[in-house]
Length: 153
Image (cartoon, rainbow, N blue to C red):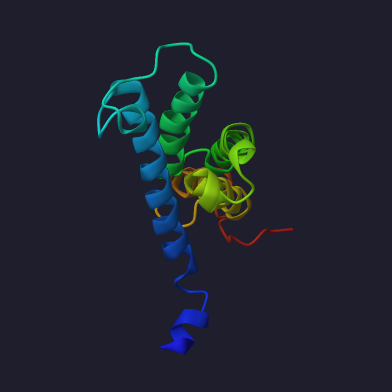
């Protein structure tokens, strides 16, 4: 078993599953805040008023960014934006209340921030549309095989 865990053959697949789970959970936060589903904004059952700063904009980033990360489309760019939004949330909303995330309720913000930062550096892993599009692009750019007919002098 330790040999399998140290190998790199499973790494893209585990990273892809990690990306899918993190993106799905993040998108669910945005959907809850914008549409009142899954318990609504902050578990209140309601929604955030459109255009209110910073909550509505954060919810849009959560829904769109989480969806892009979930699909593995523009993963690195979306992950940077999502990570930044969670860093902002932690330092502006949670950290003024207390130093440690356990004391200020900022565990989710801190974890999402670091998870998205990891994805910004590692990319989408397996199962992502980024990989599929990159493969299609590289197939188009490969030159056609040359015929090996002898040249007469």
